Structure formats: structure tokens, C-alpha cells
Length: 416
Image: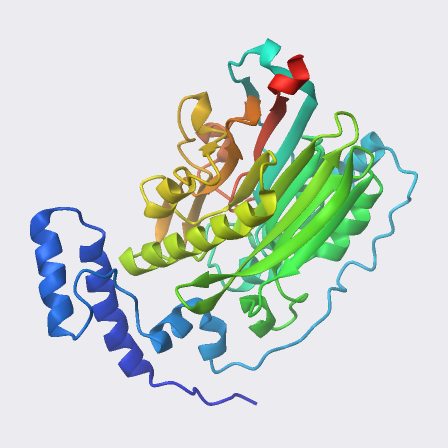
């Protein structure tokens, strides 16, 4: 049975149009634009000189879109991969070969080729072994197959029995020590498969995942972190629902504090997935999420080396990117930017109604005074991606994975 909508959507639409106008002007920096914003604020009875904050009802609509649909939640459990049994003694190569050969429905197709680049660094200023971190929005199965309108992608490429093997292969072939994932709605599959290679994983779902409104879903999507338990000890785990102004959003962050068994140094690793959609208002909303994210992470990271991975749904020109790189309490830089520049894209797709979209929206931020980047995984070449972009028969997500090797920087105590 469908539930009635509890909100006046026409009033929300009018409020949204006004909020978008005010947010657009507030992002401008010219004196004339600021005078127009102040005049409009006075006209609307808002506090002059204060940053624009949307009405609470509009905020609730923006951050929790699922609650405003007329659909009923379908509370399914993560249970679609019970057909797979993983031998706990399977070797790395055996599992990789399994991914490349095992498929119940489709013929084998090779993953898109990727290469690494070395990043210039001082070898005398680092210690220990490199820590390889992988960041990836894996594409929720429920959303990718039902909602995202990948019109140029063959339907069989979106089927889960094909995607799950390619997804696991993409992770395994880079052999990361730490894995940060978004849009995970098959955590059980990843957890059981990766456990055979000494990975432990934790998952936090979105509070109102859009997946649970889709028939035959596999539970809510969310963020996950996996780490090699033969290399790290888990010291702490924290999770947070990100806030925008005074409202809880539908985006989450997961944070782990790990201890390197070799160096006994501690590392803070966090992942998140910020709100999507274009427009000045959503850009402002993402920036508020970024501020809350930094406050949350800095309160737990303290003085530890820190890495923050995620799909920020924001180009480098958006305010949240600058917010992430200008936090006094947590001096961060982008792992890819230190190699010269951010990649030309991290997502490249063709969607019905939108056309071709190429964006740089995924990042790996790190504390530049505590860690050194030694290599990064390059984005694939356009000729290797193909005319239909991704997802495709050769890649299971609309986002490409980011991989970087980090070293701990030596401290003054280390060199004594």
C-alpha cells in the first residue's frame, strides 16, 4: 500500500527556488552581489549579514528525500549472496582467478587496464612499509540496476552476478591494506570474500537509504572500511550521521583508529559519501556536511596521521573542497593533487536525461605533515574505457577506484 505524502510539495518547490537563488548569490564574492543578498535577506525578514540557512522543512526535504516519496519501505536483509561459499584457506591468486573465471550468466570480460605513477618524495623522511589505501564508490546494485538510467550500459553488465566478481577483482588486483567504500549494499558478500585474505570490515548504513524503497533490494546502502588484520590492530571505531545546520542528513561517516603492527604508529582512517545533485543550494549543503565531517574526525583523530576517503559529489571548484584543504585543526592535502593536479575525472558515465557526464568528485585527503604519498593509481585512458563509458562489461561502477601508497613521516623522536 502506498502512503500519502505528508508535505506540501508545491510550497517546498517555491521554497526551493528561493533558496537556490539566495544560495547562488551567497556563493558570489563581489560587493554588488553581497549588497543584493543583504537587500533580499532584509526583504524576506532574514538576519542581514548572516549566511543563508534554508527553512527546516526544506532542509528535511533536501537531506532525507526517501521519506518524502509515496513508496513503502521494503525492509530486506543482506542475503542475496548465500550461493557463494569461500574457502577460508583460498590463496590470493586463487581468489583472483575465481573472480576472473567464475560467472553464472555472462562470458568473461577483462577489467579496464590501470597503471600506477610514482610521486616524487624524500625517501629519507619516511619510515616503515607503504600503506596502500583504496577508495571507491562501488555503485549500489539496487540503484544502479533500477534508478540510475545507465541507458548506454548493456543490461547484463548491471546484473549482480556479473558485477560482484568484477567488483571483488578490482579490489583484489590492487592488493590494498585499507579499503574505503561507498554505496555498499552487499556487505556480506564483500566481508566473507575479503575475510579469506585477512581483511576485517565494518559497515554503517545510511539512515534512510533510497535502496530500501526499491523492490528486491538487498538492504540499505552505506559506507564500509576493510583493513588487513594481520597488519593492523583496531583500536577504535566511530560513526556519525552528518548534520547540515541543525538537521541530520542522510549521509554518514565511518572512522577507525588503527595501529600499525610494524611501526606501532596509530592511523586514523575515515570514509564518507556526501549529498549528490547539482545547484548552489546543494553545494552549500555539501559544504556544511564537510564542516561537520571535519569536526567529527578532528575530535577523534587528535594528533594522529589521518586519511579521509570518499565520494564528495563535488568538483575541486566547490566550497567543500576548499573547506577540506583549509582546516586549521586538521591540515589536509589531496593525495592526487600532490602529484600535480586532481585527475581529469573519477566518474564518467552516460545517463538518460543527463547525457554524458565526466566529473572529478572522489578524493583521498591526508594529513600532509604526518604522511607522505609515494604513488597513485592513474585514471584509465579514454580508449580503454570505451564509447559507452561506465558502468560497462569491463567495469562494474560509474566511479573509478582511487589508490594511493602512503608512508609515515619520520618525527624528530624517530631520528634521534
